Length: 279
Image 1 (spheres, helix red, strand yellow):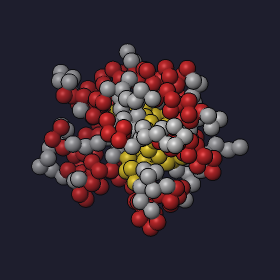
Image 2 (tube, one colour):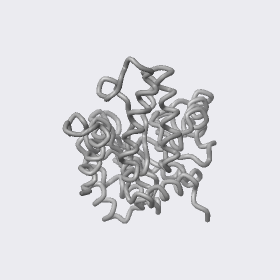
Image 3 (spheres, one colour):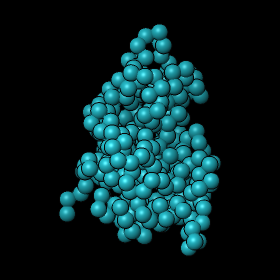
Image 4 (cartoon, one colour):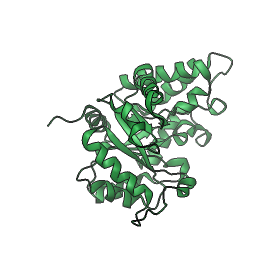
């Protein structure tokens, strides 16, 4: 049976780099080494293109968060589109972090924005409104869909750890449902935070479906999660590494704030080595 196009794309990018690191390209103008008196979109593109030039052979995806670009209006959107295309030319899958979760025509409009206007390969989605919120995206059959299951923020405990009548935490139910949706829509995967003590439980719950799903794992670097510990857990459970992406954003983008003796692009490379334990 032929592999789903997005899963194949993930595996091929992993095969080229041997890395599961995903770079979160989230622009914050006052932290960037840019000239804000010039066109901001062009400056954002220049900044992140320089970083990509330094680290593209050590990462296997990028994840621009749409909100960071929307805050800068049309110039920000222009930058998002250009960086998406630049990343794809480097063979890097582009995950648009949107966390969309509406229904009907609204959800279809979000899908068109992500996949047709911006050109993303995958998107993050919120399942709170059920499969109605996911289905319009799955019409783009060759793309990826990362559904929030257990997030890395402290507020995740407000709802995600709530016990159902069965005693199962809500996040486990969500993971089980994601697995059932993925049977019909193989591009579906899950977002599971690296900072959660229940990370191992999440991996075991996914594998109960009989196969590995695409995983997007935020929370390493500035948020305190450990790349090496995640990799150890995945290896111990025989998880398909090619389907996994561990995301780091500000710890790479703004590494020059710590590595002050080098340029921002070289600093990003040092941050990648620090995160992954590479020499």
